[in-house]
Image (cartoon, rainbow, N blue to C red):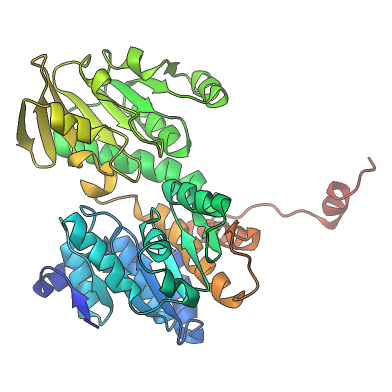
Length: 416
């Protein structure tokens, strides 16, 4: 088994600088690493991990390795892997198979290489790793005690597996933890999406008409940050309850067909396909900017756009213009892939500190409850959520009130 398959090991020092920077700003995960290093709870445990490979995720890998885990690491998106970061992991002795810009067949091969260690625990980001285990390598699934899924898209996929009765091992829905979706999805996606759009276009957001596809937790963060930057925001939705919430948060709500001619910048974050179609694009302004903040590159109809465009050219790094049959151009950032990680550095470090703390502790939960969990999608333990939240407050130097015994008794009684 190869130790690694990466682009360039000589990039390791640059990747190590990035990892050390984020580690200094991830106090919760660092505290878990110190405890893992002392207790070695994953000694002899094989963990295969498929996540966006940048500095914060590299730190998670090293935290698990500090706990004694035998790690096999690969990416979860062909554009999100940072070659200097994976080089740093390889130089540190971890098995890693990923590089930026991998072809689809290379990406798939790397998934299978990472799985070849016959993992006991899998950590997935988007569901590709679990899908390969259930399709191409079902023989390896027998060795898996359970796994963790971090994204909305991935949880949708594993819930579909559970519904069909084919899920071969328990999966913890890390995405649904309070300390994940309430902060990572909202504040993390909100900030990192606009960081990517601004750094890749160098245009002002204030005064622009922004169209946000969906009003889930990620989209709420995107809309909130756009508004704070001075944009006028339209939200499109299919859920009447979410639409009401968007209206009461101060946004216009309408169908995408009505929003398409008005928007300057479009961001879709729904977890579904063809939110922005060719029919929408043909009505858009000249040089309208299209981006996707969902896990897969299906929210903007890139396949239809590639087929319909009469001209395609690179305008800036990560920005491609497509000329349509009506003569107008639309611009796509990051090939329609996850804009905040395929064309930037991903979520802010502090938000990922919380999310990855949940990941690490959920992996430990899988190990400690081996053989006791059904082959279903499992919620994160409330104890883990509370512990992570308490440690974040402690890192910020914030204290809060506690219930008195009298108050606890009152809340547990039906008597006034």
